[in-house]
Amino acid sequence: MSLRRIALAFTAGLAFAAASAPVAAQTGDPLVAQTESMIGRFVGELRACGVEPRYVPGVVVDSEPSIVSFYEGDRAVHLSRWADAPSFVRELVTAWASAGTLGLTPEQQFAEIFNSLLVPHELGHFVELSTGAYNQQDFWVGEVNANRIALAYWALDPAERARLPERIENYNRFLAALPNPVPEGEDPHAYFQANYERLSNDPAAYGWYQGAFMRAAWAQKDDADFCTLVSAAAT
Image (cartoon, rainbow, N blue to C red; front, top):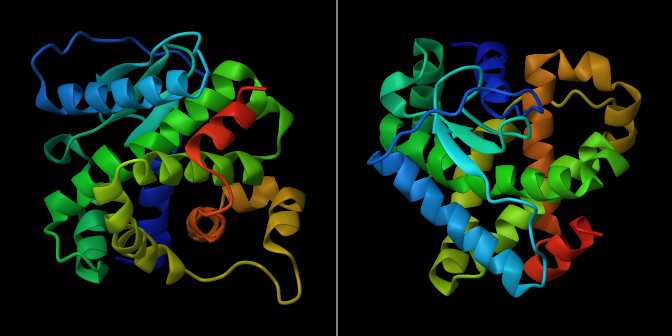
């Protein structure tokens, strides 16, 4: 599978949108229960920081149009399960698992990235969108800040904080191998803002940028804690 096609699958999976979609009741689904627990803890931590959300996001398990996303329209985190993922996504994750650093099977790699690690990233977008902060910042800042919120969320638990370096290495190994689309001497942030439409429609370039967003967030992981980040997003 080419890096370009792999990037297409990956970036499709990270999409989030404001469009509405039907919310289906999925009582008893273990993935729903796991995600609801994560959301419950996230919202609890928000409240502990003095940030009261306008609503608590719901959970929808579906496979289209994305693998993990937050939809403002139906106020829900949407995610997919391995068994329902499109075949090209399963090919992607199989290749990704082979390049990964945690020794995971493809199914485990899928769950690690799309059902776990990136869920608080989407909840970071939830905070930004529900407070209006997302519309007051550029795309790069929104993505980096969502990653910073996610990293700070995981770091709240000492055991999870200890695991973060290896989880981020496993996440970033594949993305860092994509071709760097930024011309020599250009600033990646400024270049992205100036060429957003073209880069966002180039799967390989956009995949590289997803890695850049996480690398930027990781470099700032010690600069602010969870409360500082979500309070800033809520003002």
